[in-house]
Length: 322
Ligand SMILES: Cc1cc2nc3c(=O)[nH]c(=O)nc-3n(C[C@H](O)[C@H](O)[C@H](O)COP(=O)(O)O)c2cc1C
Image (tube, rainbow, N blue to C red; front, side, top):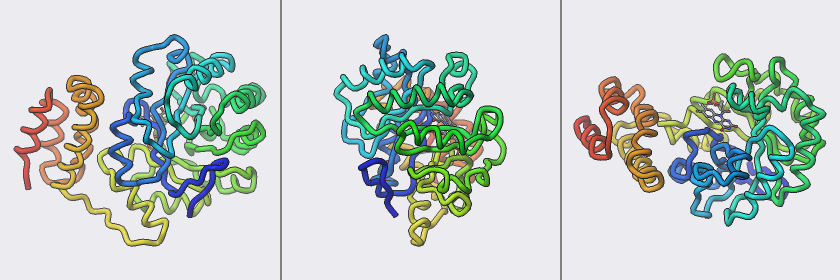
């Protein structure tokens, strides 16, 4: 069932979650084939990177301008720099549908800059910042949050964001303290629909269709965000969308299909980033395409340790065939 973020109809209830270092243009393009019309997010973009014209920030913003629905996620540690960053972003010729604020990142480097989930500690300050962002942004503003910083106070966080004018909230069902491990607390989200009148999405440990269905049943969320579960398993988005529509789905993973997927993604990434940077990223991601498959151990070791070029990638994939 579709849902609306402000005036924009979102056709699918599955979302590709933002992941720094992963959700590049190539990854989004590759994944969109498995879930056309799904909302996708950029990697997180630094407000100061925008302000200082950082080259890497520009590279992270690369798009073919045909992505929709598409949210650009920005992070920053002060109202003033975030607003400045948004103004610079808006001067660029980039098509996007939503301006997303990262209020979820737990890593120390980001917290030290008062950014990411740091904002969840002071809801008055958060309200002031978000209200201003909503005023300045020409696009509807969405937010990605956690359940709280140390303790769970997601009801107050959501109410604050809705009052500030936000149009959609994606909630990672863990606190900042919990980082990325442990069982997500979906129970804490079972009353969110009664607290706010804007749509919300949920995130955390969605590795199989069953995980998505369970989380959806508990929270009645409008959308499910898929993050780590889709790395190397792109069909997960398609399968979740089918399951949510009571259609048949097939979670089996096929060796030759996975090889084709990896090649397709690798070619996109090499085109975007150049061979050297792409191979360095692929060393981390490529092995995940071969989890629980024949030759899993051997091929994963080869991809992470012996691959230094596109030629190596092709040779490794040719060596292992089924
Ligand atoms: C490598 C990595 C990078 C991430 N980067 C971001 C990010 O830039 N912005 C954000 O809002 N969340 C980020 N996340 C959080 C994910 O969007 C997601 O909420 C989280 O991984 C929980 O979902 P999962 O348990 O299904 O992976 C990142 C997660 C991972 C694993």
